[in-house]
Image: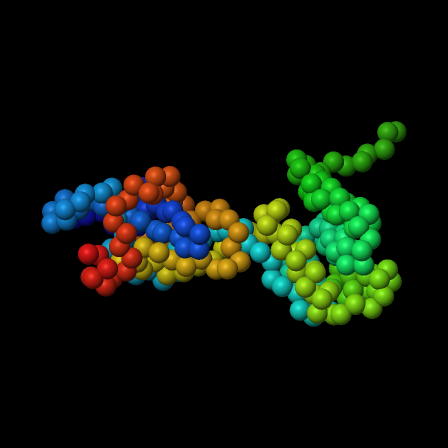
Length: 132
Length: 101
């Protein structure tokens, strides 16, 4: 009896992608095929599986469209990045009124804050203990 | 911080601005942050279908981090990415037999 390929998915399945699609292929283990070409991978030919594929990706945030939208709770933007949004908007508005010097200042500040985030890269918290 | 907070800050500096334009600028900022920091990670689920190779990605996807298949023990298992996908000769796309010719 042939092994179900989903018992050990990482042994049989693989993926690749183009610009806007992802391809899931499966190792072709058939030996009695009338096909003229023999390849290692082919399209998965088993049964359909409900929610059988989980794709984890970095994603854009949802758009804001109301004054009451909270950047942290509604959009999911980390609090440390809120000041970056303010700098970006200021840079654009100064650009609109033709003050390129101030615009450049806020653009640089935006980029600097973005580089610095997250400020604690190690993820280790230190307690500030006073010397007695 | 709410969108209202940002709009109020801008009003103090620049006077009243069109609300829609402010939303547009804030969304552009948020988009720029998402693309450059790549720190907004989400997982999406879809059905694994037989005889289907290509699955559409949502518009908001920036970069794929991992792909997992639900195994027979109902656990998601990460599968590897093919680095030589261009060597696959058959580009069959769906269950219609004609597309396999």
